[in-house]
Image 1 (cartoon, rainbow over the protein chains, first blue to last red):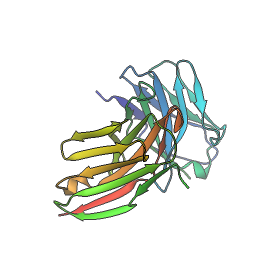
Image 2: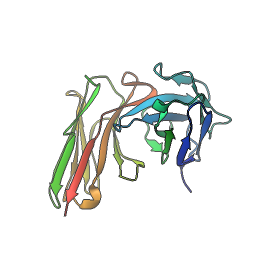
Image 3: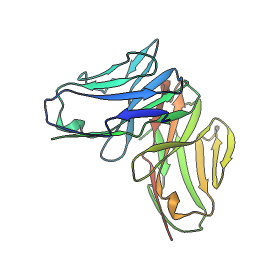
Image 4: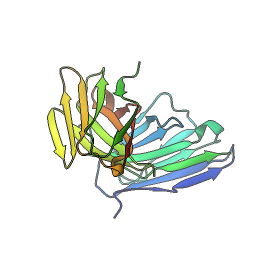
Length: 112
Length: 112
């Protein structure tokens, strides 16, 4: 069983569209995260979320919104996609601060 | 200056060589992570350290909290070790709510 699964693996879409990336973890972890890896392979936190609190990186445009229907899921919704949104997005989970992280396999988003 | 600096950026080695990748950080942390990203893109957590040294197979990770420095060593390197190795720090100051701050990665190529 995949511990952190993301879908889709690849997503190609046109500018202006709205899209979602799904993430599910079966580890029972309390905290989930979304990270963005840019073209230079640099990873950066976008959001962290547990059942109590959403922490948003202030650099993330408000076109991006995390949605968590339950503790095991943290989906990423993106409105009005722009060319600069093209990147690989990684979902991850952990039991919290000071614990290890488990990453999903990534979603390569290409905006054309 | 990034809060997490890795060196070298690129490293080419011959099979069998002993490899060292360094990571320095400038913030207070609760833990430091070493991650591996293969050409296929997936990210695997190798180690989480808060003090001392950890060993797993041919991989050894050390951390010096006072000097804010960590090293990842690979003994008897093999072409299958070719990947990007990423240092990341997490904790109350290095990243809120358990978020990670990443180095830019070290691209390792091991030639047969």
